[in-house]
Image 1 (cartoon, rainbow, N blue to C red):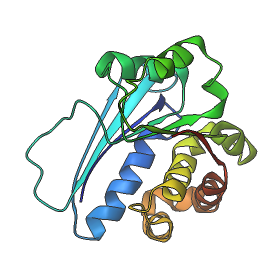
Image 2: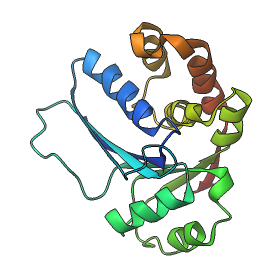
Image 3: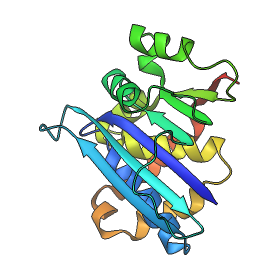
Length: 191
């Protein structure tokens, strides 16, 4: 397996946490994992990304241009992804439903290369996170949605990581709720 994933959102949405959880999950299964993050001077409130590479073989490249999977939780993060990689034709694109009306997002989706096989999903991740009490659960909810649409991602293994990781114990109940809710919140947009 060789899988590249870019999580994109605002600082404080749990983007880095989501990539960390998924990376830990697959490292524990014996895969090679590389996780990087990029955010502006303001750790909270600014657009940020977290990249993750999961591979059966050793990882020799520290970056990638176009991820296999792109998970976008905010319109500014979508714009940032466009500047990092103008070709957004990933295999799978998961977008927060709330930002689908943004003109930049609509234009970006309309300009996807027609010959690419990008499957687009949307999920009401922000609403779910707010019901759990904080937008910080958006990243974890996106993991649940991702697991629901991609059979390479095992929801049960992610739940195990959430239950056993010390950094996540404080909000274990909310994170598990976000995973389960995210798995149920997915809508197929375009194949």
